Image (cartoon, rainbow, N blue to C red):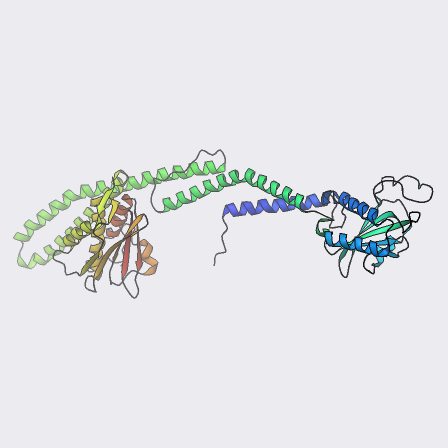
Length: 482
């Protein structure tokens, strides 16, 4: 069983998106994110400044307030930012906010002595500590911590606050806790990055799309051309103006189509010439046999009749070869016109059933027309009817109907005969192919009838197909433009 096929366009675009993902991963690694929680990383888009601004506003509001007032202030900011705010002193004692048990790693940082190490973001981090031990002026120092069981994200911001009296200075810690990696926009605002990603994606698609469409369009055109060549239509050509390998391939397809067209046309012309040359000696042989039949002794009559039938069979084969070759050679020059199908089919049926016992029904709308060359279409339909009469004329009626489907007209000729073996169904329109291997007169036919049908229909820019009918029978369909 064949696997699922993916269009080349989809594969290229998938590879393009994988390329973007790889670039995004490399980008993250270069900026040192490594899946660490660090709001001051460049990838967080300056949210560190936002956190410092919020911490300064909160600490300015709680200065000189009572415990209850501080709790109300932190509750208000917690509801506004959808995170939890707490206030602790540098000894690990909670000063405001709803009661909370700090994880060990957070408590350790809260109660650590004042220092100006690498994690401090104070403007004077490398300066000596001023008298009194208070931090120098500048942004508040902060530390980000990720705790587990459950996973929570913490920010410890070192600040200086005043107690309930203006003279009471306290080295405090404003703590922010969130269960979200981006802190609902406070730690990390994804919107600017989403906008950048969308812009990059759109620009990349606009940059790649013309190239990919050009590539897949050329391949699709060549695929369609090869299918057309397989259907024995050698007039197809592809655009070979590209300067890459696809242009070379297109040029090769055009050369192949030209050579095949010349080969097939030459073959049909050769068959036509041979058939034409054979007509004269066959006619003389038939004339001579007629004279010989009149003068032969009675006991020799049977032999002469056998020879005469063989010559007649040869003459029929030559005529059909000539018809087949002429149709193929003249097909490209056929001028199509609207043909009234009911009128044409009725005329063909009347001609083909003269002296034949065949039950044929015609179900074609009176005004239905199709684009065709009347003589070629009549010859195709006549051959199909003749084939149905020969193989299924005594086994039930032959149905001829035509329907319009969108911009096409489908003519269906079906019978109740034995049908065709499934493995030979696609070959019945090949020249000189016969379902029976023998060529006795009992099985009849030269193997050119349906080949002529195909040539005539294709000369009218149509298609012919056949399928078996359950429980038995054969349905031949001609598809033409309406």
